[in-house]
Image (cartoon, rainbow, N blue to C red):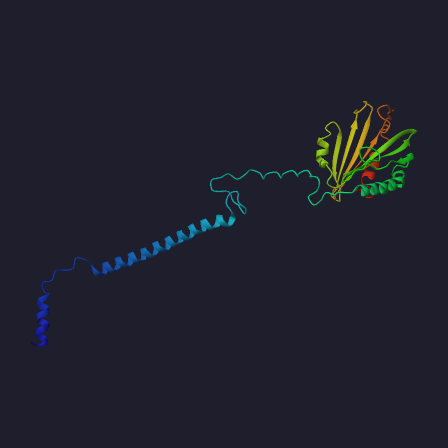
Length: 274
């Protein structure tokens, strides 16, 4: 069979083929459109996934409610109308955290007491120039001359004459670690007295307690200056409008025999210490 005869036979074989039931051009266009839509959907899905990832990451970076670093309120919560007021500073405790209690032997206490006694013989007349016949008593404990091992304070009276009347000032030095209330607690322990607390530039604390109409009669007046020092020592100096060494039977003067400023100066004397 010649090539021409083969070609004619093939033409005759497909002469009765039914027509296609779709338009090829339309099919190609549809495929292209679906491909474009799939790519658009994939891109949109990737964007949503990225936003979701950021939505998780941002709260973690800022901190959740009540966590450090939180800067935004949770969705649906109400922001506060005004910032909270700062907390009031706490009263200073006693003794300071960095202070170690001190302990002295009987010999050390007696030596220190004599050093302070010698110092006050010159210092007291300089601070209270109107005082006459100044006599500084022995520093000791509960009873005159009594000093025990490990004692954490020393106490003395400075006797003198003011306006012709006998009187005295009490001086007590409390060592670091002695049983003392904190400065604010001193005022709480004296509710009937006039009490002030002042922090000094060196961070020590001065407490002034003024009593009137107490003790042995309504005319009695007592003022005590407490100096809470940063090394843990507390010095207290008390002035009276009578003679505290004479017992209950004593005359009362109109006012204290020393001024408040003089009490504070004595209580702040660095040479009086344990």
